[in-house]
Length: 220
Image (cartoon, rainbow, N blue to C red; front, side, top):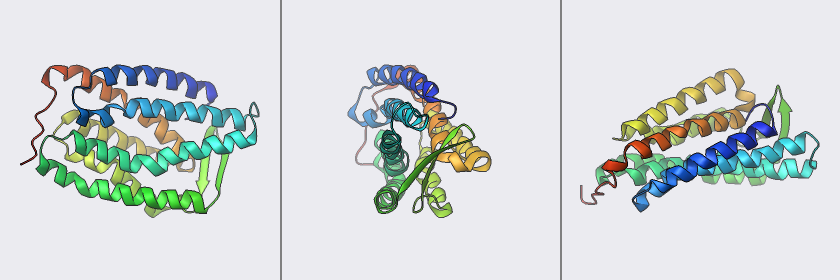
């Protein structure tokens, strides 16, 4: 996230609280992965706080690199798969889940490519204009960015849950703005704002408590 280690740690604490409350509202195992996203984002922001400490010289450069690798592993390696999977699991009918399956498959393939790239090529971590920049020669490519957008946001637009569509719209807008304005630090900046946007997930779980759990229909 932009600015400093303090911003990351404070944001992580707030999101951690949001995540815990969200998890208490879970009423079915199919809801669990989607409800876990705020908590995962909180952990993600916490990790980046240590990247800042390493880059600021408070901790060693090795800490900055290792924690940066952990941050990118989630942002680029796992999120493209976890996001569509969590949305697909949440849907009530098999027909709707079938529509979302291509996004899960795309996310899985993208995850495999990202993991290969992150292990085959060195990761460079630095600060530029108050943001952390993560550079990997295999993953920092335009075609990868396009597929990443499709994988992480696409399935949300096919959900019958309106709040998920809203979550998808917000994340897509933020992602496009980040690419246009601050692409050099896109991984850090977008993940920070996507984490904040995950408050929408808490609002949904809180307000829909009386309507869940859904009747998950396997035959339709």
